[in-house]
Length: 119
Image: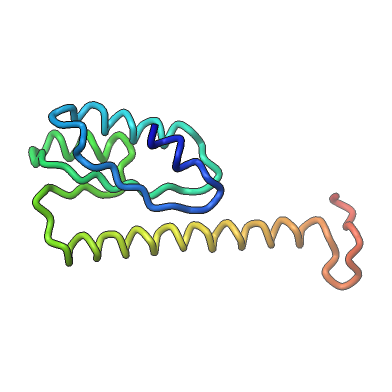
């Protein structure tokens, strides 16, 4: 299953393509499964599909997709949206690193390296 392949500890972009034919339900369930999995890092989800009805777009986004593109897609638009996704993933990674540094500083004195009284 594609959701299992995306569970690595590295941040990843994830694109769910319209290989499921007319089964939009499968893509929506995949998005829900990714969000419910509570993965260690954020997985950016871009739905690429041939369905352009507003109800399909809303269902995909409500299920946890970050973006939704309707085929046929212009290469330049896909590249721009993937670049946006990469920025979001990199921001999440930066935030995670800053939070870890704050946690480390909260339990250890930066001058002496000794654990502080809250530890």
